[in-house]
Length: 406
Image (cartoon, rainbow, N blue to C red; front, side):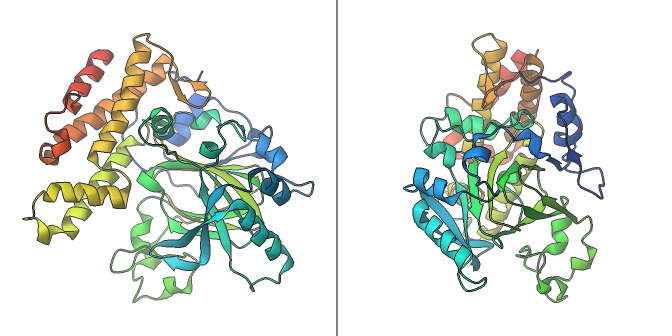
């Protein structure tokens, strides 16, 4: 069981503490300590390889010389369809992706090992929903520090659509991910099954200096373009850059709103999750509102069209990943499970194998109360048709949360 010693919550803030080197955690610490020192403070860190040493993936997917065991992967998962990014082809602010059979991607990877560097495409297998494809394999166990995971809890119990934010990445030396902040401004964690990575981080807010005059962030923070004052006039003002080398077995915790870029220094396999919980739900809400503001501004000339509000919500979902109604559905699912838990109507598994305790459930409900109040205070809620006359309105859920906490 994971538990908190108290339910006191700190003031909302993305990043209040300046750090000049990457904190490292080499020995087990109390969940409460990690919660207070890293989650609530939104501070990055890296866990040593001892935390993942018993993972099945670190035994099965790694060769005797500590490289990816591509033969094992091809033999056992070769028919899986996987998303593969071309690191040499920019597609908007990301990389162009195609779907491959894993066996074909492995053939490419094997061929790359035998071909002189620079003579073939650099392809990176990203965002493979491995757990969804092989739910009984048991490749790894989420560390308890990341177990309060509302996002994957939501998708685990949802019945209408299958999805999750649990991914496997595999790529050769030189494959990389462009400069970005994570979806929904979520947290993420990334564990190297084998191989090594180089990470560059900028604290929240510093990305404003790394954008062009149109507001588009730099694609590659190591690009010579960043020195072009006509394209990136504010770049010299960017402060707080942090770099860290992630070794085999180590796990990086990426806080909300920290922009980052990642390179594979060797052939590498990693396991990655995106996640939200009570300590960063305010960040997710603020980003949702900001994204809707941007959508409304972009199509302001069409504000007289029929159901302009509905069109804005459609565009919000397309660009952000959630609209207001799905965000509320997410809050409702998490809240009801904690209300039921505190009422003695069954245990709540926050995510994976870790059961949350009473104090944790109360803490979560207090954060959900705040977020529901913010949703109800947004005047646009009344204009969204999907909220009109709904039986389970946010105001009703807020009453249930307040009643449970009283």
